[in-house]
Length: 134
Image 1 (spheres, rainbow, N blue to C red):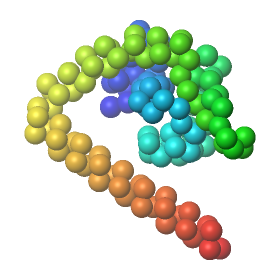
Image 2 (cartoon, helix red, strand yellow; image 1 turned 90 degrees about the horizontal axis):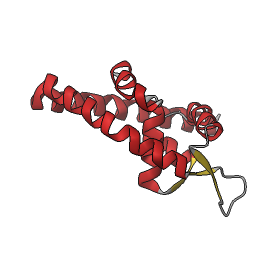
Image 3 (cartoon, rainbow, N blue to C red; image 1 turned 60 degrees about the vertical axis):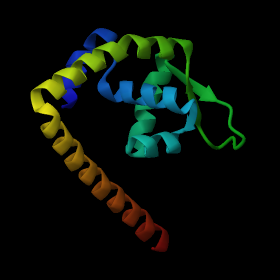
């Protein structure tokens, strides 16, 4: 699936993971890396590496946060423009997926992926608890 969306987004010069981060920031306004990672169900260290590339490309920037230890992010004008160019490409890819899978297939895929996400979150939470008590 990732390769399919990466191919579709290629003209925008964004990968689907970058598109997801930009779209989440557009939706959230500003967010800490932790909030963004939770929203996207991505490991925080993995997200931090991806965000560094987005910052170097001037698609995101640090936003002021009351706690200076917290890295908060927001889109730049360049990031909003990149997202605007990529959205129609993503929408076209999404239409293809829906057409190929059909409504029932798409619903089933979302349900199964949601279950996998739930399992991943449960495991991550259990790991954090065991690390804190050790």
